[in-house]
Image 1 (cartoon, rainbow, N blue to C red):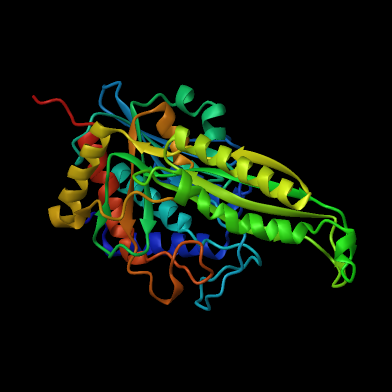
Image 2 (cartoon, rainbow, N blue to C red; image 1 turned 120 degrees about the horizontal axis):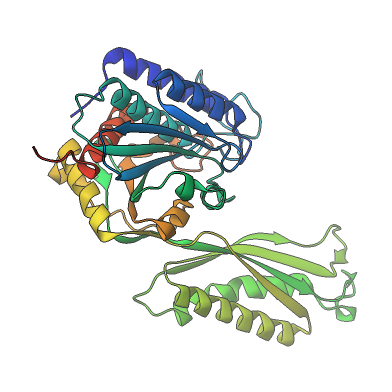
Length: 392
């Protein structure tokens, strides 16, 4: 089932591509927020701005029910140089919509437009809040919106989110209750040795050798500490040390990420990293300091809301097109903060098979405009299912 006529779909594609061509980073989505607010106002919606600096909330009411839901899209881009050469490629060096937030915003705008224009034809009773969130990528814009009063200013019974997903075919959706995306924690390990001439290594404590041993040792954290039926990831993503070819550096720094679904697994992994770090430091005569920076919590779907979303997805796409095999993912998502406060569900909508480098956070990614129609249809049907009008 689809809801958009050809002209409306063309408008959405134009908005999506305009957003793609003008990406903005966390808490600086001023132009994007202006477009969103302008469109919502043009549809006749009540518009609120200022939460988390650039956040926008549109409000649509019908009937007399006090029930309300929130539908959320993210707006920010990534600090990445785009390598596409199509007409709507990024015009801002070092910034790119490589995760599809341009498409998420366009889909939610499309749903707002359709619902506003066909309010009398859609059988619902209550309030829907269209939440356009800044700073999903690493900066926790959802948490800031909540702290700024999102749920107190806009009381809602449940909140729903959607992400496009390369690798899932167009016309399919992944829906699952429970943990669907991991919690994330950044770590930094500082190795302090004793710098010396590279020709006289016996006079120093080689930080790079100690750091290299630690990188290898960290690969055992999950394999030999985490119970086999649990999930966790430890990845070293940065190594910094040394500036000259003939100097063994005084210090080195390792950085990376931990992903898990349970607090107790996160704690287990952190203790294992500390234990290995201190042991290797002792073995090489170095000193090591380990710091952890917890970022996003796990994204956990509530059971009742997930079943509602599954039924809606089956209605829009067909029963056979709703799957669970792609879930969960060790990627993280700050929609998790909203789900800590309100029940709700986060789903994945197929963006295609991801050919030609079109995968998330890749410099050749592009949102698939073919799924705009599907996303709008899902949002519209979800609203009607979540806020049904009372039977006469």
